[in-house]
Image 1 (tube, rainbow, N blue to C red):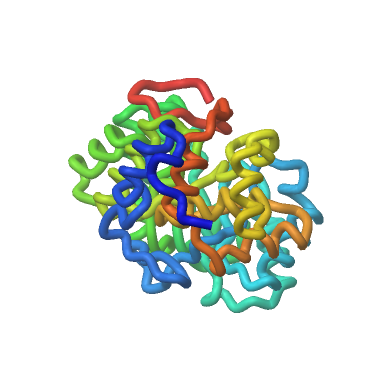
Image 2 (image 1 turned 135 degrees about the vertical axis):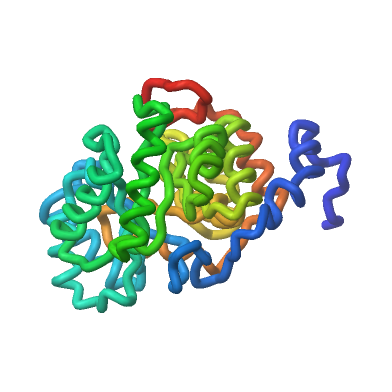
Length: 319
């Protein structure tokens, strides 16, 4: 069969395909390697495929312990948690039972910003997390939210200075943000001269253009982006017709295709799963790469987005 010509491509995809080299090629100086991402402040590479521990019935207790152990046994090495998740003790137990050496692990947590008002509060929050996780340092600590979480700019600045204090004390190797937009990040950089190593955001094919622009800006600024909600925030979206068509083409699951969509844009992912099969599938993403046409097709698919927790707006918004 002859190769498909340009006239056979649906008109709704032509603009996306024309821009594909810009949208889906290297987006900035963030150094990407097959085994991980170079993150400011750390001598280790941050794994690109982590294990998220938020927002599901199995994110605490014995189900979480078994999930973390299965992820580590399958070769995964990044565990993403947060103080607000309330599962640090369970993660500590899973790490102990796994037998994986600390220097092989990357552990990310997030400051519960609602409980912090001063730099000292943040330093103490880090110490509390370390005690609960039974660790001597965190690879990465993030401020969990900014304006959109009711944290005014002056308070956000104080908390950012607190993370810098923790980094200087050696209890945190890399520091970053979660759910912060460009205006908030630029304000923190201008006031302190310290650029966040990472910004963690909801990111999937159906986030608004302003979020995609934010991702590109972060990467062009040298800030690594980690995605939560990579499956679109809804199981209905993950089962969408377009996603299924692309998955069938590559012989992969719908979830693998959506995770690969993020990886192909130099964005790390932290999917959460309970079954060992799903955990192994989430880690099995390196053997294929989506074509620019498939990337554009996924992005152009009309699926109403459902935002898990945060919207990228310049003023505070409800979760």
